[in-house]
Amino acid sequence: MEYTGLIRKYPINRFLTDQERERQLRRGERLDVEPAYQLSMIRMSSTYVELVDKFFEWKGFLTAFAIVVAVMFVAGISAMGVSSIIDGSIHEFWPHLVGMFLVLVVPILFVAQWMFRKDAFTYTHYPIRLNRKTRMVHVFRVDGTVLSVPWGDVFFCIGSLPQSNYEIQGHVLDTDGKTVRETFSFCDIAGSWKESESLKHYWEFVRRYMEDVDLGPIHVHARYVLPIANKRESFMQGWDRSLSMFGALPFPLKLGLLAIYVVTYPGRWIAMTTSKLPVWPEEVEATCLIEPGDPYVRDARDNPVGLR
Image 1: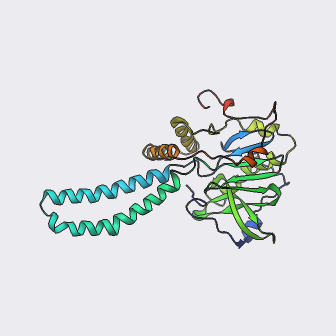
Image 2 (image 1 turned 90 degrees about the vertical axis):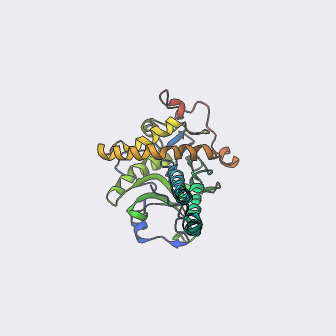
Image 3 (image 1 turned 135 degrees about the vertical axis):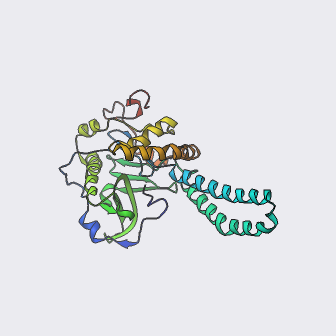
């Protein structure tokens, strides 16, 4: 799980680093890798493709963690209070209970509430829309506003994150061409420097969609579309999406993580149920009209029955 951009902000008002320049992903440069969309596509046409954000996959973890922590500490203090009442020591022990509540529980509840509100009562996801006709990139920010920037003005690179993670980042630069004013990212995450080379597969999916004349090969790659366009995922769809992360893991590790998911998945349901659907501004939608008979339209209606 990686929350840069949601819990912690991307560093901005800074110069591009040497590493970012070295690992730049250049527009117009075809890489010899197979494109991969990483189950991130919400819908596609010859006008635009809409992709899900990186937080979508583990949405609900913060909610579950916040609830579990809050319940544990409140229950612990309550248990001590009840115990002191039963054994008759409440008159001696209550100052300690109040002190522990104020010093320990209140700050923890404050942090838990802050984490909860970062995940629940927000948006179900934060999509990125790439319009190949207008050559624009539209990013739905976590505060509900929208960043719209020309495709040719974004500096793309494989950027580093805390805990030695890597992702594809798009930097919006100042007029000097070297000062970062805003950063957004795509959904794919790599857990090491070596694994970060695999991010180029996702980049090629994005780049070829925006730059290739023939959309046929890209259209064929995208076989499954997330059924979340203009609606929330169902409980089972969210469960299936969560399980998809475990596909290539060794069985013992998969089993351990599955046990964690059984405990935390209700948090995803709460976060999704309480959050709003993202809505693009009218001016963005006006430039994203799909022509009748577009042969490259793909949405959840093309999914197998039960995944729509």
